[in-house]
Image (cartoon, rainbow, N blue to C red; front, side, top):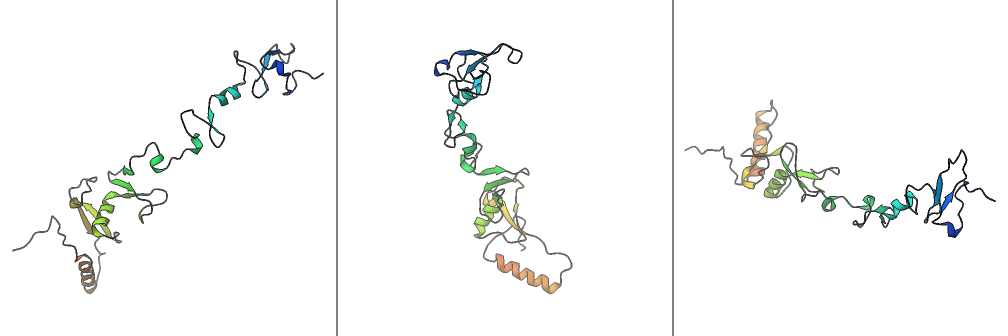
Length: 197
């Protein structure tokens, strides 16, 4: 005859919800055991539960398609929930503010966007749209009024970094002609430009 304390031997079907009294000895200390109605394992009940704590916890959740427990209101478990882009609960329309105060827009695939962070400064995108091309190396965008999140086209200026010191005069003139040819098609005046009469 098998010992009642050994392993997880399946009890007789009529004993499912009955309390099984363990042998009173030093090892069991007179603890009453119950068999779980689901998995048939012996467990120490904390109250009148008919299932072990593991089966009760599992029953309190629905299951996801992957087999993991999920909340009743959710369609998927936490591991299967998509959390990128518009599906993220913190999605703000693809716009965020940089710690320096500049507005950034989510533009995956832009040359200035990285894989890790697909955001690009909005003033750069506005200027590229005005120019009809990407910014070249050495070109920067300046906010005329100094407000970093004011990206209206009339508030943005295209700036070019100055050449290094020690340039030959003929090279400076050639560079000046190159810059004038590049920006000749834009009738673009700065607020600082004054006409001399």
